[in-house]
Image (tube, rainbow, N blue to C red; front, side, top):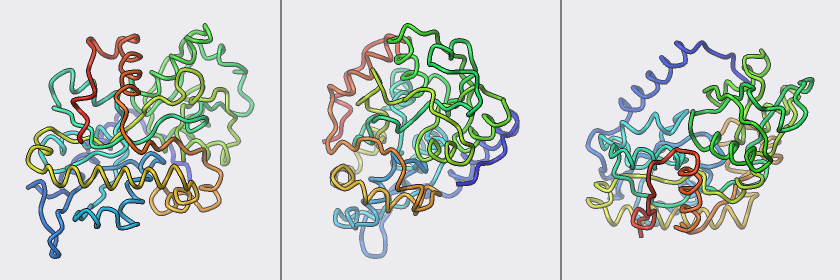
Length: 322
């Protein structure tokens, strides 16, 4: 996976806006529609991460078709890019949706959130804090006050890294927002001291730049934490209960397949994540839960509350589509 040159903040913002505009332009404006064979057509926005493997497996193994669904996948670089389209009904579902962002939107009242299925849970080395091989940073304690790249500020990466560092009584870093494909070049050019990269970018940065792992982002209090899910709106579920339930069943079946057969995930990744088959074989995969667990989501919400990312408790159980 070739690493791209970093962009300036202004250029990056313009790129995000353009990407969001392209997403909106490329989606049907009427929400759900039907294919020529009578299947319900859904548009799903997804990131090119290991998080999205169950989505692609469900499509390519015919699990969506079995449920009478024709799922079209729209790639995005950040799940938040697709939020305006979701609110307008131009995207039906967002995959690889970072829970932190969407729980915050739900609390603010900007999104009447529903969770169709869990995406992934954090596993060892599915994301790592990486530093250049010759970096003076030798231990997690050295991150205090240093610049660390994350894909989105005040989100799952900083939440979990803060929790890990707090558990080790280490100081926290200063976070810089840099898209995953640009983290390697930013690290190489010294624009940040470390990069918190997620697979498959984690392995790519290590193999292409010789970066070393300073800290396992899936360790300690982060391990097993729900990281992402398949989210939609209450309005979509109300108007399309059969499609919503079918989508959930298909993704959960694919997640069960992914959990039981990691080789299936590794074979799927090169089709959408811009990794080679050799790279896919060496990736550290996340956990793929077969069913959503309110207690696991409660754990995430408590951590968000402890770090001030939510002002009040949220009961996730009513948000889960059954």
